[in-house]
Length: 627
Image 1 (tube, rainbow, N blue to C red):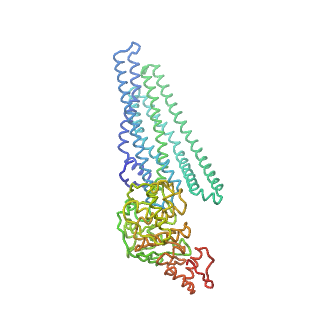
Image 2: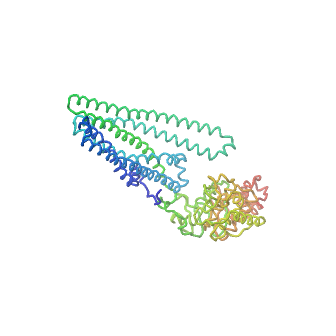
Image 3: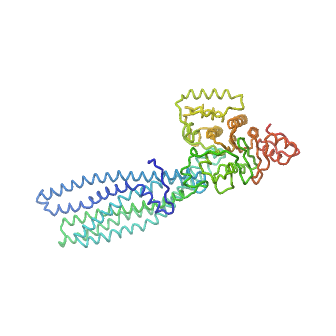
């Protein structure tokens, strides 16, 4: 696959997109067209040599003319072998170029739009484009050299037939386009049914991926049978649509055999009558038969090309639906060249105009709301994932006025769901590529981490993350996140493999690895959404204090309701039902004010009590929480 960045393709029409793909593979297509035209023309003129040999008096033995014809055929077959082999070889290159280009476009679009893509298209459709539509688009481009070669050879045969017999030449020139037109009548309904089938295939793929991803949950709630029925119904619908496509395709395949056969029979019958009356010689009869039999090949190429084009149009429409999804933050050009490492980190107060929340620089601030979605939405706004929402400023400058690379270098948001990807633990942690792997032995890594873990058992506050290059930086981040058990559970430590979505790890381990990954960005402002929700109380408290110490003098925002995490924060902001700031103080101060009966503090205490699993707190029964 070429390493050069892909330019942005046109997305206003299917034709423009297909022409763009063709231009991308133009060099191999042109070379394959020359080779295919050469091989097809040689195939087309071979019957003329056979007819000439028959008319040259073959009954008299091997005459010099027969030797010349035979040697000419031998030379032609040698050229044909080279041209045909070269055509196939180069067409494969064109096919690979187009297929890889489509796959790269999809991969780039997925990484560029992120979660915005999932709101407008399904997982199954994305998978279907990569698995099948990319191949259909590549098939169309690959078929083009053969179609052009077949068309040129058809013209050559038609001219040769006209030179010998105008009647037979006209039959060929009129009959073949007529046969091709009849074949195209079946293509349109076939294309429509193929489109329906591909939609059903996407639905089945979506159900399959959802079921596999949530299999453990389904087993826990006893929902396997329900999803099995959904899959059965969807697969049966796909089968019905597949049968409908097969019926139409069988008609098309029958016509591809029947119509050329009838055409050959007509030409042979006319030529035979002309030979009987002496209008053409026996050699010319053989020649015409050979020409006519060969003409079924251009027709076959044409019908296959039309089928591939029909599939390609369906696939191109689906690909364009995907490629026209616009990112909700930043422009497409900006997202394509997005590299936080090249951005300029900006520090200063972070202010959300809608809620009135001002995040104090250099402090660890907690966001608390009775509805967790409200505080999570505020935290997401702070990272500029949408440009059409309320204004958020950093150092008195709106985030939407800043280059997106600067925003990503300044503010990092770690979501509530710990998303890990297939690869080594080192790769899972060092997502920005800042960490150069060091050749450290596995035993030494585990021993070093065990030593750090044992020395940390009785400590609540840890030292800041190490800044030195090397694996020590990764190990320090794992230590802050209390994830030493992840390192020791993998056979090769930092070089150990993390399976798809981190399924080889427990929920708490995934969450701690994701926290370590976020810490390793060393962002001036780090926003953590429910970073400890899957941890037990002892680990949660230890991690909260370690993060506070590791992020000293840098801005940290934590969305949480856990009293153990709130205790470690410098200040706590309670949001009301509208998402606006209601009260701000420390966790201990708010609890003290709640004991005094203050309404805002009582509302805060009620949220914290609910998170701690205690009975609802009222003004008449103010039980202390989180001490």
